[in-house]
Image (cartoon, rainbow, N blue to C red):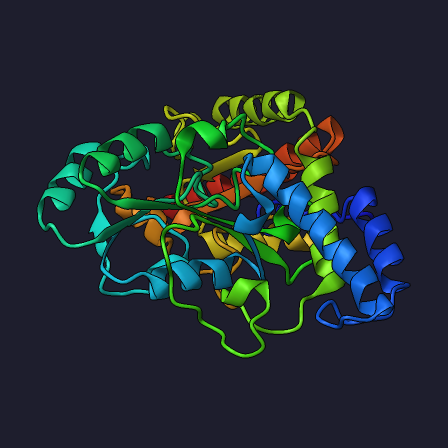
Length: 371
């Protein structure tokens, strides 16, 4: 049976450009740290990829540090910064778990950072401060007001980091104008291999490396470079960022309209805020998240109840909790994240399958009440 994949925020398809780059890189023998001809050939591949990532962010290639993924990049910043850290209550676990002493900025009911609370936190101390706020949320798709966050943070001399994993390629962001100090990204979210990511660094803001050894990546991240992963990232960021998401956004909006027509009491989280064009997070009354995920899986449709970075567990979302969502709605959420390969037929199959589950649940409820 051909499965329908609606979990692209977890990981997406390997792009043809990235696959081609990987195959070519696999034919190269050598360590990029070696000074002989083989090593220099591999080094050229790495530096070409570094330039491709740098071009996307309009920074110097020397500001790109390759990592094993965004989790490592986030940990590098959160653990390597010397001073106070302010983050938000809706960040990815790799930010929240990296520094549990960090101050948590509140968010509103739509999942956007409370700018007034952020300023209050910044006023609280004159020690060196890092503000770490994601570009867009992986569960709800809600886009954070980064420009406003930067303006406020700069008034208090704070450094700024953003986990940009979900925003890369989907948003028309002028990264140069934002002037962020640190940016994390992950390859497999944009069509590169899993196990590769990068950190954009402000060279004038020193951080303590997590990994020490041979001094690779200008001592920011020692260890033999993941050549095939790096070239896949370079090729993917170049190809992925030229994609048009307007059709996917229309498909997402149509899907939500159909949901509400069938069940007007469906709750769509962050609906009134700017969102990623491919993401919808909603709660269906009377049906638990894990029940929905298992039902769709059995019907050949892959969906998620939230972040995919939680050891395969379906658990209550701290993101929705931070937005003030209460039980039972809190335990009824489902996330759909569409990709460039998603078709109208895929969307309609999801709606038909969801309708069957919803109507069956309502029928069973009425029968229990009647009995």
